[in-house]
Image 1 (cartoon, rainbow, N blue to C red):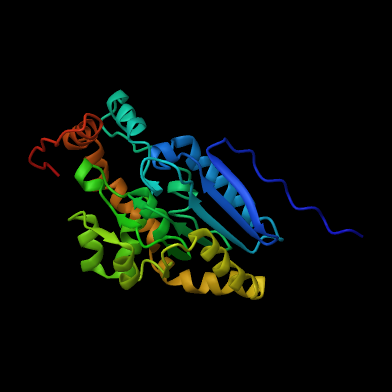
Image 2 (tube, rainbow, N blue to C red; image 1 turned 60 degrees about the vertical axis):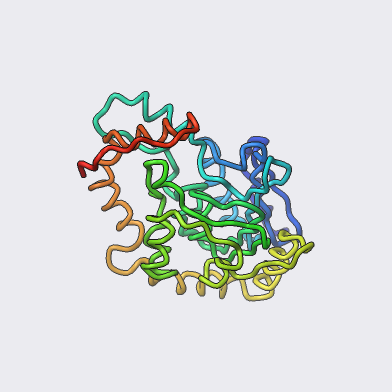
Length: 285
């Protein structure tokens, strides 16, 4: 009997491009270069569907995520669509306002994804906010030398709420993670490699996607079963006790809910949209 045909990929908008550099590797490209590959609410859910399909497709062993080129500056992903968040914040009439509605698996369907199979990110340009949140939960990261990494959320009055904070504290150490989240430090690619956030910085003139494919092919040489189980073992430390996901929920449902209902988040988003400095008020948290 012929083997069962793989399930068809989910339908996506033109803002996501799917390709297969080799028979066992899926490449997903964020295709909003003029918007620095920022994600709309709909794209979070489209990506979650893609990752779910990838996990259910036996012929795919490894996936890559990258950002399309051609925008005003090179970009992997420069966070979410701030205009959508600002509109939702001002439109809400409840005392507790919600952030943009992400799927259960988080920003880009990736920042809180557990899944079965590895995802490698190929970064060229800025990876800020949600872009860095996705990287914090990726299995490996390859970057160009001109790439930059940061969590600017606090500068806008919001919070990196999609799982990166506890992951970065565990992976980088509390003090380094604090410098990113509290002081808004932006890392160069070489600094990110030294900190352990990036596996490899490609040489000038080398294509970052090709380098990521090369890394994916090394994964593909291993037993697919061994990769799935080894990956689960590596990540098991994140899920001991309450686990990363529950820790994020505890903070977000607690003091984070007060931030969402406060004045500073509205001011920060409005100032960002209006391209001015925010006028913060003393914290009531």
